[in-house]
Length: 158
Image (cartoon, rainbow, N blue to C red; front, side, top):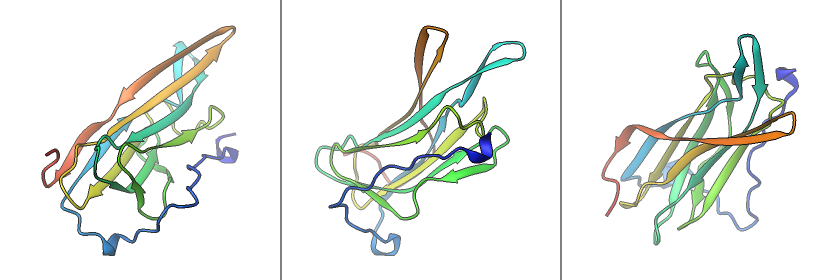
């Protein structure tokens, strides 16, 4: 049952600093739309449940970025879950992932994530993508869905 499924936020690192958005002087950032699929149709009325891993990779070699929001929406555009409750810094070349188990059917075939990030200096933009995996009988498969920038603040890149 979708109401009983538990979405899994990332485990915080013990050394992870707490960041308050009011303490940041954001000069650049983006809002990124990431299509995801918690299930897909393989016949007219039959669908296959998929596991989703949303990955956010800071590609900058020298500077941190800060995730300010990671939201998961269903096919109807309704919020299913906010994955972070406070800003989450990502150091140079650091990555973080967010997992939606295949037992969660709340997202549907039109699920998506909205990821918002910022930085206190110009940085190279992160790579944000969803990886979906599933199995049917003895066959396993996977595919990715890249994020798309839908709004931007300041200059990205150096």
